[in-house]
Length: 168
Length: 405
Image 1 (spheres, rainbow over the protein chains, first blue to last red):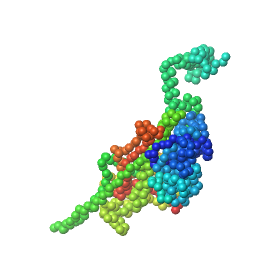
Image 2: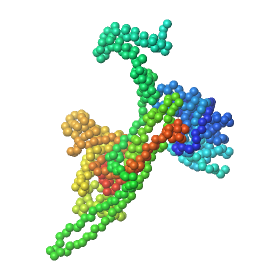
Image 3: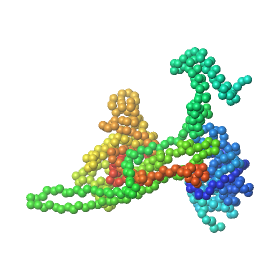
């Protein structure tokens, strides 16, 4: 899986409105355009509205399901075995924190974070992706591992929550 | 005015069905099961008519619709579509633990400890008529090892309980899990790693007392075997990891492997106080190699021997050769090029502690999980395994192909 929470967080799950627009890529499961499960979000300047996390505001959590325009499709109702139908883009979604996560691929990992990035690097977000923290950003995770990716060419990385704060 | 089903009243629907039944009486011919067609169709519509107002039939219908909430088969029937679900997940075979390890269940407060001991040969000599007997002292050189136990635990697997549109999705989520299989599979994998471990595993050259290898082992009980002084050790196997002399880069499993197995076990005949070590007949062979035994016999011309005839006619899964039935079992986890032969005694032990097994399911009753619309489950088992040096000979590996370096 491209996103997996390895250690759950006791922090409460947050509910915010998912971004209604700017749905940027084809979702791995449905192929429809939206944001995938695990996309890091933060609360935007509009109260109650989520936006892609960029390290400038407190992190709200990882989206717990895919979100896509219009939400589920007819096939979601008919085909057996479909779980966790997607959030309707622009409507309420849930966001959970995590103590330890693993993420992979260009939809979740910023291009500046590569297989050569040193472990213990402070990690923040850029455009809803894990990214190497830069000056002025709120860094909440640390890079602790670069496991073999599921898809060749991807960067797969494991992050743990940074307890305390790093000396600037 | 034409009525369709969606706008008909119950009375109109009943009237329509009654008329269908009356018209059906005039049909000629027979149903596929030989009944008169006209009467059967009339009966069908009459039953349908009754079912519209029959409380039992209504309840049956309601039950079916309710079952369609959770039962995919009922849902498909209700929707009038047929969804064929194909699963591409394939399973690893789990043969190692059951074939080469003895399962021991421990009590809650037990810890396994292994003691290796050995017997002492007493000299028997002629003496003069007036005595001259020598003395000997019993010396014990036992060796004890504590076996560590570990917890083998699944991830905490979580899934949503309810979907706002689909209702309960717990059953559908659980269908993707094979938690019990995954634990069993992990145990089997651990057993294989131990069995084939170069340092702690079963395979390799046997060390025996007075084998001339320096340095000698610290205690006599640490050797694989301590031979009686009359044994000519040239008769005994030197290893349970046999490489066939005829191997090449393309050679495969063949009757020669079985001959090697027969020879190996025959070499131990009469050696063990607890009885002879013998093959059970089960040979675990990599799935890619097992059918290659068929290439030894060409199905043309005359094959006038019973072994060849049996293979050609009955296949390779069970063959009789050199006076024994052999079950050639395909295993998709073994590396190609070698097979494992099961004996009537196991080389290893697996320890478990059922009293500490855990199979936890938490959901609606857990406040935090209920808040997040989640259920989660995980399982845990106590696991410990070891292979004793003195039981290493209880398994045989035959390498029948030269693998690239």
